[in-house]
Length: 131
Length: 77
Image 1 (tube, chains in turn green, brown):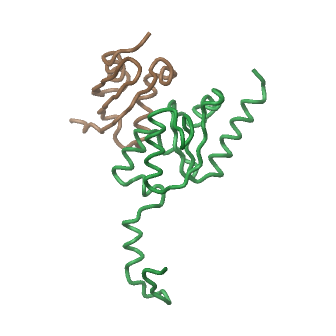
Image 2: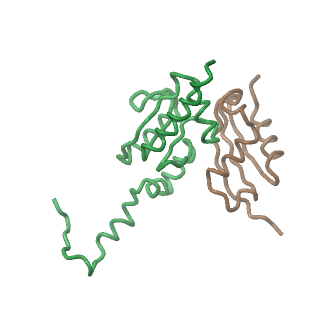
Image 3: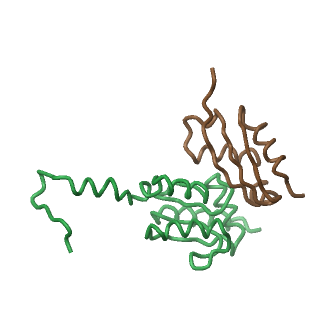
């Protein structure tokens, strides 16, 4: 095993997490998930129309090693939002069902829609249903 | 050597003070529903980590997958 490769790999993972607001480390690809847990997590993100970066951890076993070392989380998939580990499949599903995931992703349509619809006396224009 | 749901249950309950676990599984993939006073005040991530920590590197290896659902058990005084 080479001395430098693991550190470079860890750095690459850190950079990927820092540079992508929503990034999923998974088995396989969003188009062809290689594991049911990864597939379910992808399906949730896609159902929310949430764009996300995806990293297949299967091509190199060291990716998973380094990732789990970084995140202190043993299983795959792992979803990161704004640099923070949100969770694996179970947590993502649970948060999706409770609406917390939509909040974390900034998709809290309910609250935002209310805020937009509410009269804002300070705004110069009230534009609704802008096309 | 594959694990049994009973083993998983006993280890969770031994590893997390006051925990009660229900575990099902086929020897490689397990579903655990865990309730513990120790979860109080913790994020879901931190709760799940407490459960994963019971098994260390066995998760993903001997225990191929461990699906977790946590609930906070109200401490009785």
